[in-house]
Image 1: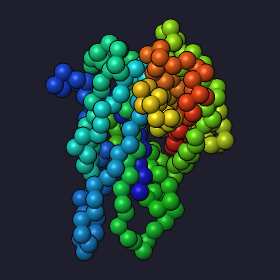
Image 2: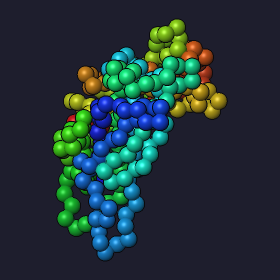
Image 3: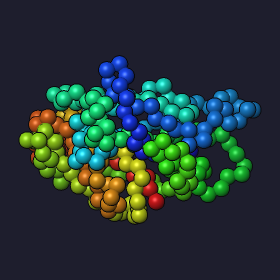
Image 4: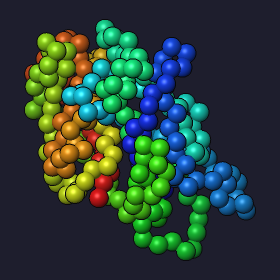
Length: 234
């Protein structure tokens, strides 16, 4: 079963870092859904960053998913090397949001039907609201070509790429999971790939990649950089 959401709650300070406790109670998961079987394993959570500040979230990284459970997990923000410290004030002022996808094994049943949890992802409202938005979402995943990158501002600190997502045929994209893949020794020194414009346009998505000026737009093809993404929407 798959559940997705965008967490738009306020970041708080924890041990000097901006942290966020993500509520996933809307997934409706229980510790053991089938008392006759061994307890099912906890869910897997996948996260990505999104913002409404022209790709500011590409300058930070979520360190990891901590304490994952049936009703939530915690994540932290750290600035990319060479960037200013990511305080709670900066994170909140720039609307840095965590987009997440939760996946959990489903106990066997004989009363399955179309939609969640059998054949479609669930989307919950988010921003603190755990009610169900739809149990019949669609998911679309792709890997782009390595061409099409261009300078993305800040004297080459970022690269930018606009991606045609119209083949996904979605009226609205609710959650976007984005990352960069490429040759070892290059792509592991960059960060971000923040999706910051897909929310208002279901035909195109713009992403930014943090490079600290070390790599130029033509290096993306040289080192086989590809944007890989999954979109969940309706």
